[in-house]
Image (cartoon, rainbow, N blue to C red; front, top):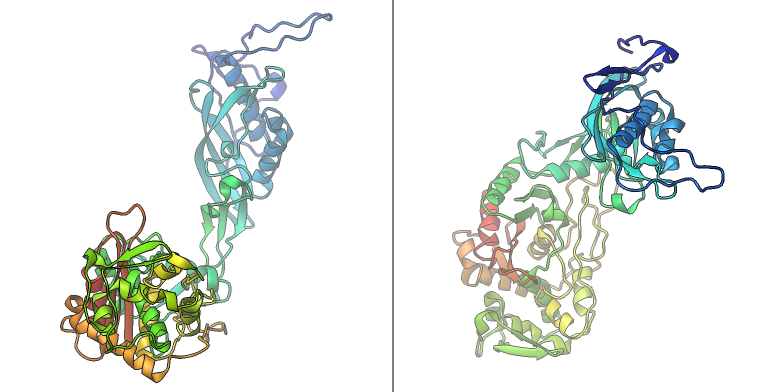
Length: 557
């Protein structure tokens, strides 16, 4: 494997002193030349043999330059020569070192190792690694830099390499290992609904979706895995929050093909919209089928649109309103209380800027987003009423959505007292994301919950989530009336201006501890399109998330 230099027999090799430095040449089958530069590796360190009637002297104090370079030389020379036991003995954790160094050749398939130390800095010795990774008929050069630190063992004062997995490779944490072989999952070529390829170059925030598609469909989409040298994380606490990492790709895999429901024009429009507003996310679905037509995030590293878990604020009032109407506690055109304050569970709730609506209807309270109109009904509700409504009618909070990639399908936990009341207005323990709230509007538009999906269930035969019941015709009609009125005359009117046709909307602002501004929410539908968005730390939903959602509803026709 490559050219190897011949070296003299070990018994005939003598150190050559060059300008006060020592150069040592070590030979080993299959290993390249190694040169260690340091100060006087053979110098006397001052330690004398103890007499038979005295305990051996235990050396203490700072390490000398000689001790650092000699220890580093012993370890690196043995490692490079493939003498794993000898190298491990030069460390302060020989068992862990032996295991990882054995795997370096056996599991990681690394050979022809050349280790070249740099200039020590105190107790630390940097070094470079050049080697070859070989798997079956495939080979590729490997090069990287690492470092080791020499410490003094307390028990006998002996200088040893302070063992950590990072000595072998800087990306390793203790408990990790290096493995060369087929990548865990074959790559996939993701397509939009029209057959065009979905790439991060074309759509900036598509990365997490592509990763999810590979994880879910890589093995069954007809692709072939590539060959990689990668870090396989162990069970240690230091690695719990890290994923396996590819260090070297020896050969590329052959991708399989996965078709999604994303609409290329809407996806492009969604990317354009979130790029204009920091910390924004949006999702668009088709109410009649549940197909996800677009999803985008201003911060592309995390798919907040599908996996976010945020208090939805007053957009939750869509679900709460359906509950109150079903129970006869509210009706669109009947008078409904909207006081400045309402106290429940020892919490005093109020409206934005402490407004009140005297002798107003429930429709007026919904359109203006009156908090106390909903909190005032808490004494008449059971603790689990809102949870059941979200699950049974809107299909939320049961952890059973299967959209084709990782997602969070909302949470509406059973709460009591003030927390239950806060849940009615989308605070407390309620958590949602744009996909969840787009689905809420889609359920209102179509009258039936249809679980959103990115990949057709026909591809893999997975079962989509369902809701156990639908709203009555009367409740549904009133809910549509509330959202239409809000889109025309309420807090959503400015964003929805010029929308026309069959449309409805609801705004929301969710307070978050430690934030000066609330998260702005907006959910709406128009015809057979439903969308929702959030702008974190944006302020009122009507002026932040509203324009994003409205633009996409208009773009979708």
